[in-house]
Image: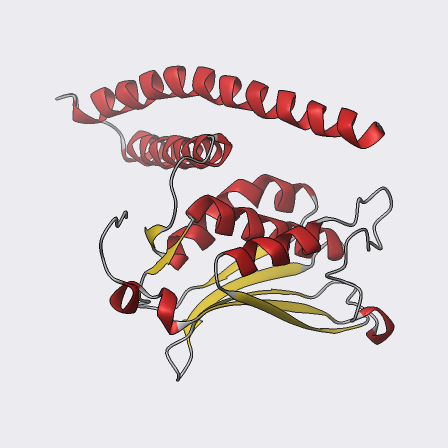
Amino acid sequence: MSREIQNNKLIILGKLLAGITHEIRNPLSAIELELESINLSEQKLEPEITESLKACKEATERIKNIIESTLEFSRRETRGASSHSLNGIAEQTLDLLSAAARKKNVALIRRFGKNLPKIVVNKNKILQATINLVNNGIEACSKGGAVKIQTSVKKDGTVKLDVIDNGVGIGKENFDQIFSDFYTNKKGGTGLGLSVCKAIIADQKASIKFTSKLGEGSRFTIEFPVSLREDSYGSENTNN
């Protein structure tokens, strides 16, 4: 019963969050227009003011990106697999978790490969998995720690995403359990995060593996086989 109550609370919270982000987006657009209007005015501005305007524009753009990412993630999934940039999914993941990382003083490091082939997946499901992995990394780190997300292509053509943290790590005695339902070493955790993650990734015909050392950190790797690459899968029903 307690789990049903918690799930219901999460559903309500998701709806509230979607409403709040919509409400924020409207005044944010007005601010953005005003900044652009000032910038385009004929009046000559002091260099310091011009620099401040530029910083304000960049900040509003970042807020807008976070809002759009949040809204997209909260929408009910209606589409199947389509073509997406893995770097784009990774960037969206970091946008959504940037506040959580700052709150804990954990650095988020990007190492994105260039010219990665697109992959044909259900974006929201892969996003759910990457958010879970990066969030786990943040929670595993102490103050001043770091979580790195990197993308690359292996020699055999497999496209992969790594989430690497320098947190507490996992003891070898727990290696066989971490993808099992209800396994957790977090206080108050449900133990469903990694098992759900593995199920989502398997459903997308990809795979997940990990390495870890107690006291040094962990690396989780999602691998998308060549068959999921847009150039192998086919380009119909594609989406940027």
